[in-house]
Amino acid sequence: MSLKIATWNINSVRLRIESVVRLLDHHKPDVLCLQETKCPDDLFPEKAIKAAGYEYIEKSGQKGYHGVAIVARVPLEKASIKRFCGKEDCRHIQATAKGVEIHNFYVPAGGDEPDPEINEKFAHKIQFLEEMASWFKNAKQKTTAKRVVVGDLNVAPLEHDVWSHKQLLKVVSHTPQEVELFDKVLASHKWIDVPRLFTPEEEKLFSWWSYRSKDWQASNRGRRLDHIWASPAMDGMAKSVTTFTDARSWEKPSDHAPVIAEFKL
Image (cartoon, rainbow, N blue to C red):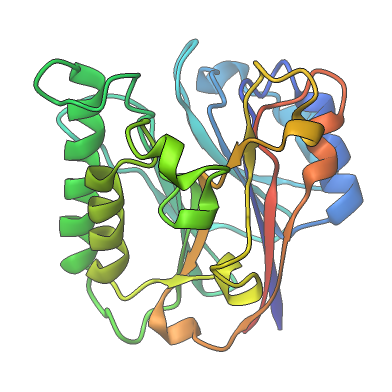
């Protein structure tokens, strides 16, 4: 039995629903996790997604900001959400598919200034990552449960997860403070960094390219902000990972590319 999971920060699901359907038709994942849906639940474009063959939908959305959703062509069970940092932001949703507990996250971006003393957004991000680490550290059945974490985690942790390690050390998403906390979250559950199983750490690997760069492919000033992790119980099950960069060139693109992983369960 296999499980194919895709994650994509869609940057408005209603604006880019045609791209969502195109991805579903092209790659046919069992499960697609979306972030930044920017859509209240009652306006989520269920009709188009169900018409594409994805009848199972779990969502946690809000008007204009944030929002996460899981859509699947296989049954979803035990769906739930968790709030972080005492806020009502819609940044997490989980559901189980084919016996795998899937967590879909949209971690706060953190603003521009990497100083929690003067930047409330960065302080929020730091607290969010701390709470993620604590939550997963206390997760039940740590060694036996099949779990996957996906989403826009808004941290590019490794030297070659950014176009210039030296130039981005003081830029939010790649600062030492964020990377240290990111590693703490990884260690909290002994998560496996699935894309890096297939692309060595010394090779560049990106999933996001700024809208500010008109010719993003030529400049290739990207960052790896979108992640797929697997729990220790899934060690050896990952069979492939694809960063579908073609989607970054579609009409009205998101600034993120989908990342797709396939597991043999």
